[in-house]
Length: 394
Image 1: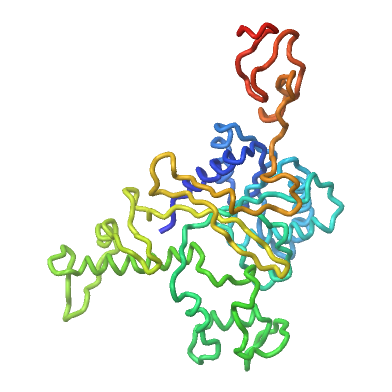
Image 2 (image 1 turned 90 degrees about the vertical axis):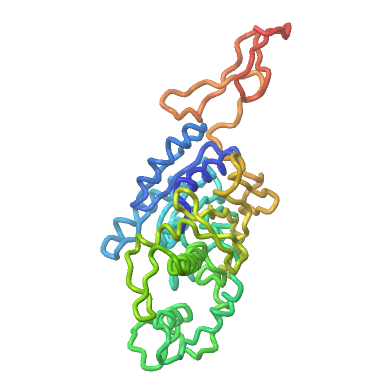
């Protein structure tokens, strides 16, 4: 129900090429080695080099905290001390909490920075909402970040559904009750928890008043996939038990048990419009034809943020049009004096000079040497035809 991760790799490369970012860093959770090893050759093929690649962004236990503290500071120094203004981050649902903690610790150290702002490119597996600790962590550093997200749309009635959750119902959802106590720092009657609380839960608390870094009132891409999956299964079951269907079996008016694989042919042919007005169908590769959204993050002083859709990696688009981006809708980090920012190892060599490879350095890093006497380049920063002083090609 989610797009193949290969499409996300393609989207990341296209995004970097779109802005001409050829000097970037990679930061991944402990399980992200495969991500880095897959992405590295794709970047190299397109002329993009890695300033650094760190793979230990992981949640740690208190006993390991002091060991990890120094490692996190080293990672923070690598990020903030690099000329690369773009950092691609890959991880799980808790990795953003670790990243924010690492940045908060790094801010307390006297670390030399090349720039206060970075463009964070976040993969679809990451999630900002990790209450309650995340409520106290600063979101401003992520202003202007670009996130890949499993495609979603506005589902009518979802916000009203959230608002109607009954926290005091005797037989209600236990998860909602536990979540409520955590995010509002309150206690329910007869609660046995020893967590700190500011008072008793009253039921008057409003989810929409929480910062979006703690809880978003819109449906996430992963939730939208689950929502769509339920309807896909329902449509497939309906087709499976229609009169005349091969697998139709009834026992005293009830459906007989069947093997899951027997549903596959019906899922493969599913095509319907969901309540968000989108057509749901599966490709020849048996994946839903949804793709990834690209969102731009706008942060606010109260730790809330807004995700603005600015692009798409669409699987159903025509060849060559899978990647789209609306530059005019984007915001950038407040510290950038030039937007979009440059993220290159070296700027182009000035007129009258040529690129000269540096021994032991990536191909994106080079020096500038004077052109041979009597020869100039016809175009700045590119290897084109060489002319002599009479402007005739040689």
